[in-house]
Length: 134
Image: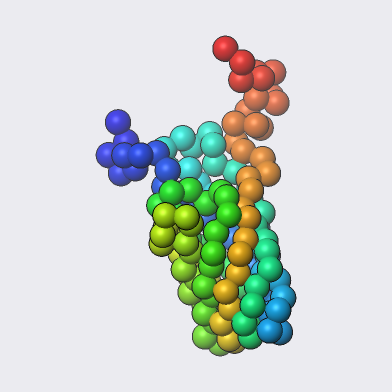
């Protein structure tokens, strides 16, 4: 039993992001997500979507998600010159957030969709010829 992540959903991310929101714009991020319950399900991810507000920035950072990083979310991004904080909500409520370091200014609200592109399990399966079927 995993006593830290009883439900098996918590994930930690390291990533880079770019925000360009001159009233209406886009936010995009990519990086690596660590699955705390099943390390072989850790992998690279991409996230992006439309945003509204007045925000520009580029940064690298870390984040935490209580119910997994994948899927659709609503994000509130606040840039404070050299760092930013983002709060992320899913259909249940607040479930995560990030802190980043890099130049930026402003704030925005975005609707994004995060997808894993390749996992450690995918890489291991490639080298062991294991297609995951039992």
